[in-house]
Image 1: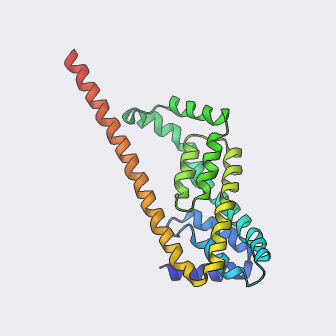
Image 2: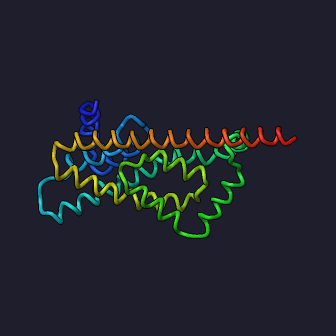
Image 3: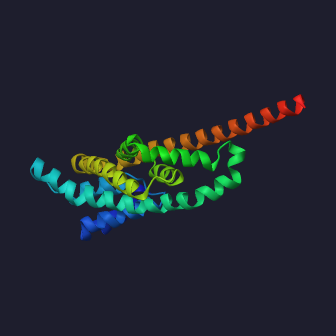
Length: 220
């Protein structure tokens, strides 16, 4: 599976260079089965020839990091937009079962407007390869982080991530395939952990709600 995807990536990015990295990063972001570290590490391996250290770093930044970050940011808008537009109706309808109201989201949204701590958290999360991008994008859309801040900090954080992965692909050669696969496995575990944490949170909310409701009925 990984080898097949890598072949497709190679045939796509080699003829188009930075433009290939950009479009491949969009596809990678939208299609979940593609490991999120694969396009950028493969780009470092295929696009950066042997040369001086600083010259190679400059090429990685220009050919891989910038177009890769642009592609990831553009691709992530799909999940950001879905969460942004569907979050309020879903909460209004189902939020009471989870102990969350739309007013809580509005309060969180105001916190984003007051300071830069949350923007820094978004930037940091984008720099870490093992944090699933879809979770970050969906959360930012759900809490209605302003689009401008979302785009800026997602792009800047992803540049760091893309630069790091590009260096790995350039330095480790064909070992990058196994490293990308391991990163994908770790990312999958992180995603599963987040899903279970959400399920636990919802189940606990429902249990506490029923417990409180039962106590109220007894008091009556």
